[in-house]
Image (tube, rainbow, N blue to C red; front, side, top):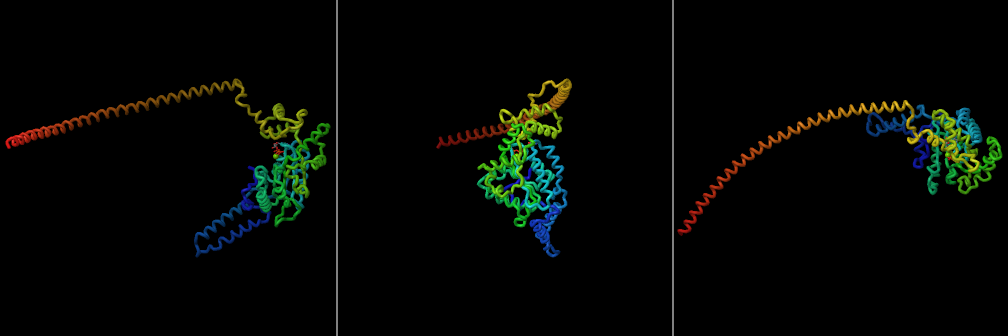
Length: 464
Ligand SMILES: Nc1ncnc2c1ncn2[C@@H]1O[C@H](COP(=O)(O)OP(=O)(O)OP(=O)(O)O)[C@@H](O)[C@H]1O
Ligand SMILES: [Mg+2]
């Protein structure tokens, strides 16, 4: 994960979340934390036990442990850039970056001079220009890795992408404040911080101007010394001019490696920054000469694309296949239309294109590979047959036994039901018969009495 600026954080949060290195002086925030640690346990006396001193002690212990751990843990340190192994950086650039003799030379010389100087006059500001996929991000990643082993993931390397971190132009005032806080906070924590601004041509000019003080020749600003920081600006600005220059060289039959910085610089000064839509155009970074190095990236030819493919294949640990390299290289698009000299996307899509050739789809897969695959396919089917038969057999046996038990209990339940309901019916009948017999006797008696009584009544009725 690349450590990037998050507009919602405050710089203070960031500063307190990281411990500065041993050789650095403690920052004001650290001093405050230490003071807090010293003062908090003060009310803890044997006569005043209570939750507040206990909580204070716990908090102090936590902060203290965190502070000490950050100091003694073997994690990354903000280091003196003088420790950078320039030879290793050079070897890495030679081994990994193709077709960029100017960019490699300028960055290497600029960086090695800067890191060797223990008292630089200003922060190093490099501006990378060129068409897409030519290695601007790639070289900045390599530089970051040689400054700090964790490279772009390092807590001392900060990458800002305009469309990601400063997407809404109207919010530039807010971004300006946050960006300045971020830079100040991180340089306070580590003077040797690296700030990479990608898509800088899309950045609001005022936002670029906000960085200006940190690139200028000040010994310190509000007590912070920015002169050991490194700023790298990436953009496609002047990409067309650089491409045209490279094409002219090619057409004239000249060797590409003969292109000198002075040739490009001249072209750049003519038109590169005179575009209204370029953030650099009215930025005082240019006017005040605060950019130390303009680094042009040339468009890549097919031979360079092939080298990128080869490097990618080797990095993946695959055996290098010349035919595969040609296939992938031919699958890329080149310009101008007729001459097809330069790759439209440089080496940018090499990795994706290679995947297409390395991972054959199911449709492409040959049906009968060879006798061994057929044999093992057959064996696998035989095993499948045996295993599934055994499984089905047990399935049947268990099913039969299980259903037999089920049926037995089912029958038993019916038999019981029959017996019980017969007994119940019998008793039902007996009780009904007895009760109805008694009922009828009394009923008859009642009628007999009624007959006798009503006859007597009628007799007397008649007599009187
Ligand atoms: N000159 C080069 N030599 C070797 N590999 C390269 C070179 N240029 C680009 N690549 C490969 O292409 C990938 C993409 O390049 P990178 O991101 O540096 O392009 P970019 O110049 O930043 O392009 P964009 O302007 O579009 O951002 C890199 O990760 C790297 O693998
Ligand atoms: Mg890029």
